[in-house]
Length: 498
Image 1: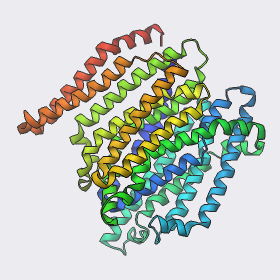
Image 2: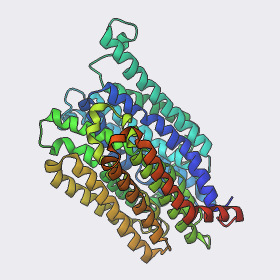
Image 3: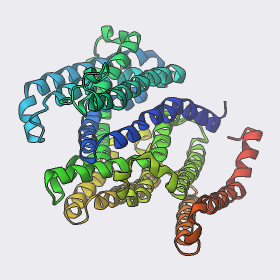
């Protein structure tokens, strides 16, 4: 199969689990925002932000390390067993330590009445981290269908249990505590049912991956482990810095907002819900990352690999710019994804969409340090982005609230993309079509701003027909894409050139 066709195919298959599957998971957001108060959703946003940090740390970058060192067929099994055993041992130690210090941890994070939240999250994080290595092997072996099936089962269980407890049992308890479903709901657990659903789903996922855990018996090769650790540990810094950029705002908002704790949690809930409206961009990037990492490594030795990477970047940006326009032009529709009380935070949506687009560009550009084994230099770029995120959030949250967090996210990802591009041109130069890439981004911004201005000024009296004007601007964008690159792509695909 031609390279770009193969990448598109793999992205589509992983998308079944990542885009469609996680979209089902994201459908929980309207469930939460219509059935829970803003402060309650703030708890969910905050604790999953903490989980994001540990989720990166507890894999130790060995997912990418597995891809890097398993390229040689004769040591693939040894690489897999070494990675799996190390992650398993590390997570066992993590769970033990967290269980020992659960009381001071819950008190310092202002959850003294619910230490059980942290017991549950310790097990969720361990199960998910251990599962990451078997999933990496499935990706490396191009077993996307099996990967997607297990992911779907996990997500399906999560969704069903959430619907059962939040949408069925909770209202039943509020209406009649003695009813059949009302008796199944304990108000003292409350939002904890969300975490219980996650724990059950993660447990079943690990059980489904048991056949892939047979590598444990092959042990841990010490010499190989040192090589893998030296390569992979910078990926922890990169991943940790990335999660700072993505999650820090929701982890610290309640500590830096200038209101009382209850109001701070409400603000956090509003921001966390509106953040979810960048779902389409986030899920596309996630699916792309699943497919792109093994794709980039497998094509690194081909003569035209850099040309392929340049083409991938261009079409990636086209799709992301289209997603930005789709969400922003039809925001009057997408806003119903979250409850009415949360919609006051909608101004953050375009900022966060552009931030995610910048992140996607950075993901494409990051091949230079992965393919040249300069992971420490890549870590430096990520560390810079994380430092910028921390400083901007701490300085401006007290004055500008969650809007400061949104702008900090955009500033971080945009600066990382620029720095990575400059370094990439030095160490692994790829001739990206910079003019077209930036042109498509600015075209999307221009069309959105033009639509907004016309809707507010010339067509305000006909706002019920907003979708007609929005559709016109969407078609304009699609027309530009077709004229500039669409026909050429079709010609190349037919000719077998990509």
